[in-house]
Length: 132
Length: 294
Image (cartoon, each protein chain N blue to C red):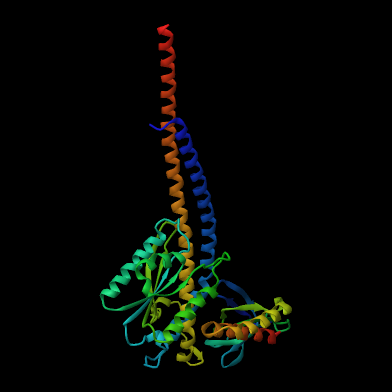
């Protein structure tokens, strides 16, 4: 039995996940990194991507999409601060695709400040689609 | 002296007012509970963010290359005030007190020769400040949390606007004016400086383990990412505080109104009964003296 550590996934609105896990993979800004118990202290910002968590080595990972954020890693904990986190098993593909199409047309029509915001949302939606 | 019918009408109208205020009080109480839960749920993120900031700050070398959000633009000429109130009234002095506080700040700043710009959050702030500071308001946000809960995205939109203004160099110092939720009875108008941001004192987080941290990317690059996010977090927390405060203030105000209505009904019923008694006595006297005359 591998050693476990505390994994927490926190969004600004609430604490989403808090459980003991054996391994977590985090999309760090300078490359994806894995975290096991006893990891040296690290603060990292995250890219858009997928956080994978495994309760033990044999089990299937639970995959959660995050749209960027920060991770605070220590020997006994790993805290991921994510602004937008979605469990990939719960994503409705048709809905997501409809959203992408809509954002694409909206972003084309919008201008200035609004356009950059829509484009950012579009990039998140597309990355989410790619991660599925 | 009003007639009996007038008394009856007034009593009926005060009674229905009392019914409305007590219903509003109940609604506010349940909304307050939800608002407090939301505020509590946002706590872990905010405290983790502040812990991260102080960790980075502890390892930071002071240099002029640090993000401007932290060290400022080097000037203090233009102030941006974010004034945050509720969208609705009927919550006692909640909005009034805050706007009075904001006006005082504006006066002080203008007296010191600074330029003031205002971003309002909440309909009341916009409507009240429009009267005398119309020229200073550069942006307004209303209808927060119309879906029952204030989403982080709403704070993020405000932040995005503020940051775009900052990058364009249109202000030097940004202060957030909002009602701090002390407890259900007390909401205190307060001002929190957001830009340049004062990092939490390292001493305030003494429970942090004293271990050398690794940073990815480098400290200053990481800080450049943390700071805008932190701005959103601060604004979001103020929104939640303000929302909880609004409901608390409304609950108190409606509780008072219900009690006042009750007092008024008591007084009116007393007068009504007196008037009725006087009327009966008068009728009796008339009958008796009529009978005596015969």
